[in-house]
Image 1 (cartoon, rainbow, N blue to C red):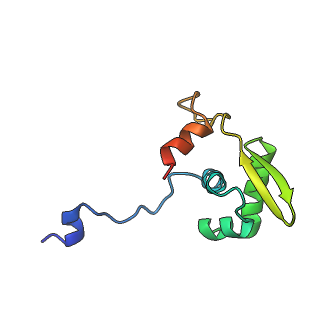
Image 2 (image 1 turned 180 degrees about the horizontal axis):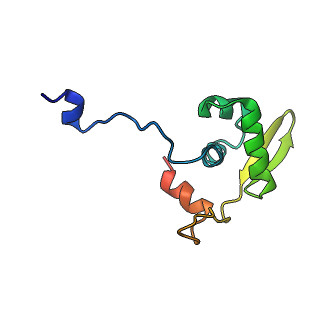
Length: 102
């Protein structure tokens, strides 16, 4: 006997993420340059401290630029940097954002 979910082709969501928290953070910031660390942490289900470390990593390696505007950070994503995929060297952040754009 098959269920309605099986018949419609729906499956249970996987218990893993296709992108790391670093990749997901970069995507969240690309969508909203004024996103708060607190919101990143909540959306990724990580601690604020972990979100701060990820943003610091991305900034330190040049993927993000932070600018203060009043009490908020405003971010910009450096889209021409490579993703550092072991199997394809010519894919950059712009390509990833293009694929995942709503």
